[in-house]
Image 1 (spheres, rainbow over the protein chains, first blue to last red):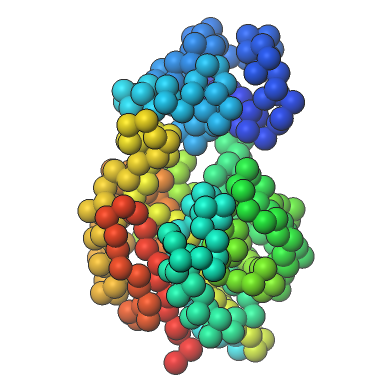
Image 2 (cartoon, rainbow over the protein chains, first blue to last red):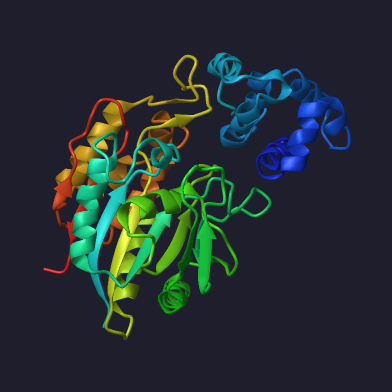
Length: 89
Length: 275
């Protein structure tokens, strides 16, 4: 399991409008084809920012999620969840 | 021979251009104008910009520690920064010379021949030039993907760049520009409540500012460990861009250094090096 795919997915959200729109419309369907672990997929769909960060997702990429409130994560929710997170080892 | 005529250091926040007009009285605009006056007076023929990419030019599939752009032209911003779009010339001869000298001196740059640049390069150029008409050489430093290059290595890179610039057999005037913050957290655990950013260690930023004002560069290089910079925020490593630039000014104190304030973990500084 590597958090690389989560980082790559967040990068794609920022630079690929069509993918971003697909995630807005149906998040589970849009990421169905991505080679994520089940834990990563669940964390993304639940907007579990803390877990994704602690698994090593880069904050500059993870933070892109809030630009369009993707996966139900508003800036306020993001701030609340990230402030509880610990830095990955 | 080419001459290193000016060095400047400024922040590069992507929020500035939409919020603070270049000629306005608010925010960073007056400090950018003060730095610009020194850069203008130096009449540079080319600007070497030392900045960090934010996953807009490069990604984790191949993220360079040090990279240089060698092309005829480039453009940007290649991110979502709300600011004018610029197509600008790259000073190809200087870029090739810096690349070649680097190779001889043990600095093996990654090279891109086809690239856009993000806010870290273009926000400063937006404020400090008239439409980015001066040819640019972009140099990227990895400031936020662990492991970072050491401050010592970045200082050595700056010293190499200075010697390389002064070794270019062509009469031209070159400026060096570093961009970035000393304390800033973006989208990480140290953000302020309800915010997307925070300034976790304003004391460190003030300390760095004082070191720069006193030209205590060797001391700063010794202090700027990965742990120390990380405590100042997840992009505290942008200090490394400054350290590259600071190696080009020797023991000179800045001719301009904006007062530090308690809100912003950054500095505005300029050095005239042409006597």
